[in-house]
Image (cartoon, helix red, strand yellow):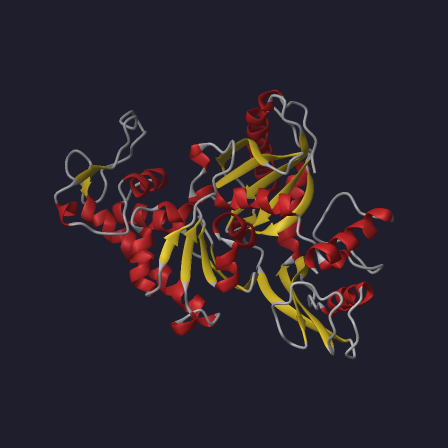
Length: 442
C-alpha cells in the first residue's frame, strides 16, 4: 500500500488505501493509481502512459531505458492523481509464465472439521508445491473439497473422511522477473508484487460466473499473446505465443516498404479484420497530416499512386493474412488445453491488439466459438481513453491489488517471501494474515 500526498480532488472523501500499478509492455508502459475509500469504494485517482523503451516480448533488454520509461509513466499518473506512490504492483506478460493446479488432501477420519484442520491442510498444500527451480509468482487457494466433492461453502463443523484443497500455482523464469523488478526499483519504487498479466486481465474483463463456468482469455499484446483458460474460479492453463499486434504492424511496413510508425497508424486508423466490397475503391493515404516535410514521410509506398495512397483492400489483405496465423496458433493452444469441441465456450479478446476493427467477428469465424471483446471495467474516475482493451490489464492489476488474494505461502513458520519484494510480515501481522486466509477462503 502507498500513501497519498494530495487528495484535494476527492473533496471530503477519505481514503483508507492507495494502490499503484504498472503494466510494462513492449508497446507502452502504463501506470495507474487507485484509491479505496473507508466504505470500500474504488476510485481511479490518476493514470498515465508513454511509449515503451527497453522492453521486448515481455523481457527487459535495456535496464536504463526501461527504468526511465517506468519512472516517466508513474510520474504522469502521479501528476494526474495529485498523489505520490512509493510502491507498485507490476504485471508480467513474458518470463516463461506457466500455470498449474496443485491438489492436496488430508485425512479427517470422519470427525468434525475444526479450524486447526484447515490450517493443517493449507500447510500441507504449501509444502506440496514443487517449483522445480522456477520462481513462484502465486500460490493461491481456490477451492476445497470434502471426500472429493466440490461446492461446499464452509467445511467447519462438517464431518468428512478427507478434506482437500485446490491451489492455483503460477510459475515464471526467475531471471526475467528479477530484471523486471530491478527496473522498477531503479525507478525509486518498491515492488508490492509481480502478477501474471493474464491473471490481472481476468480481474478486469471476466465475470465471476464466466470464471466459474469456463472461459478462454486471449490477451493480445504488442509482441506476446497470452492464451489462458479459466474454470472453477481458477486459471487452469496458460500458453504464451511469441506473436502479437506489433508483428502485424511489421508485416504492413514490409509489404508496402514504409516506416513502422506509418504502418502502425494505417493499421489503427484504416485497418480491419473484415473486408468489404468498397475496399478496392477506397484509397488511403500512407502519410499522416503532418508528414509531408523534408525527410519526414520517406519514399512512395510500394504499389501506391502518385499521391502516396494505397488501396484499402491491400491493407486489409495483409492484416487478415497475419490474423489467420495468430488465430491458428490460438486455436491450437486452446485445443492443447482442452478448450475445444463440447468443452469450449466463450472466448474473450483483450489487450491493445484487440482494438482492431472487426477482430471479434474474424476470430469467431476462425475458431468456431463465441467471441467478445474484453474492455476495462467501468471504474469511477477512469478516463475514457483508458477504458479500452489496451488498458484492461492495468485496471485489472489495480483490482487485484485491492482484492489482495491470500497466498498460501503466508501460512505457517516456513513462509518464504518470493512474490513480494518489499515489506515483510512478522509476528502478529503474519498470524493476522493467516487467520484472514482461513476466514475468507474457508
